[in-house]
Image 1 (cartoon, helix red, strand yellow):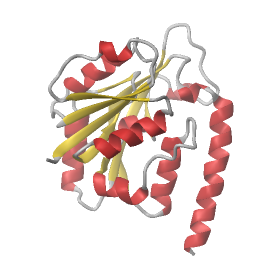
Image 2 (cartoon, one colour):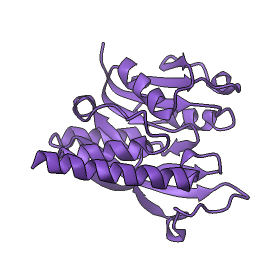
Image 3 (cartoon, rainbow, N blue to C red):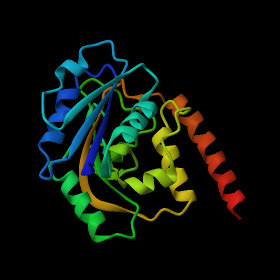
Length: 226
């Protein structure tokens, strides 16, 4: 049986963060039909911190990376709309309602993004990729935490590329753009993101290498379409 909204939340050694993230899902003004938490081979007690709830389903798998965890959730979910949240981030209470309404009223769009607010955890040095003007101010969020996508669009673009360690989400957006999927960015903060030093994106060397790789592949894709 299909549901309107599926939430997919990868979990890997996120015991200190996961309850806050899940609470922000359960506090939504439009409740999701299901919440799939994919425990990607954690060796801490993260899954034990998840509250018991009728919509929450915990899936366990061997550690194969965040892209594989998201893909597992995509394959097992039943939603018309798919939304993603990372274990260390939080949604505003109106995130799902606003984006579902927006997609329902704009049937020509394949997916929608929103704005985010980025904060540094106490004692954490600002990573090089993060601009000072992005801190504590609304900024566009090209990341899964602000994304809501139609299931048929996810199937058309394809799953997240599991060969990318930290840039599988960016690579997905490149592919969606390359094949002309229409989208919009809502001018509303719907995600609160915390940089704490253990985020995958904190490793700028890996991120830069992967960015060059995906730009090269995007150019190749566009050339093949000409």
